Length: 199
Image 1 (cartoon, rainbow, N blue to C red):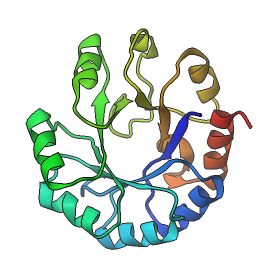
Image 2: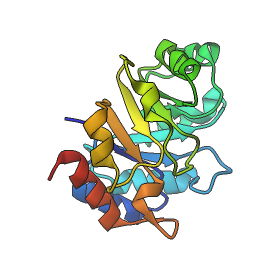
Image 3: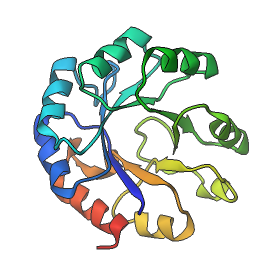
């Protein structure tokens, strides 16, 4: 079954919508400076509101190791997602100081970007069109791509069926496609999950 990640949770009440559909992951942006960024206090409240069986993914952008490990050691996150320009050297250092699984995101515009993603030492890779752009990338580039991946970028309940008819990602990641007026929409979350699961 295709894994589902609901990303960009911003407030504890978002957890209720997520809990009702039991996705495989729930994500929070923990690096400051982005529209969906949350504070450590809010992240802790969201983690507490989430059902224990839903792992929380902390999204970081070029963050110092200590900033990440504080969330890990507090039990606020169970996965780390890197969404900046982190390189192989950074990844080695992170894995040396933190044992949580690492997801590394890549912006896909060319075959070269896919080659870099395939070579990543991360536990799982995420292929995206950008950072919360709400747009898809050219999925034709994925033809013949063999490494398991999370697919992100411009996904929603209306287009996911067609996308999954042509591609078989390990999982899918939705953020803006599950929002109305910039806030998580429980009905859009439910419709997306149902579309992915064929319910």
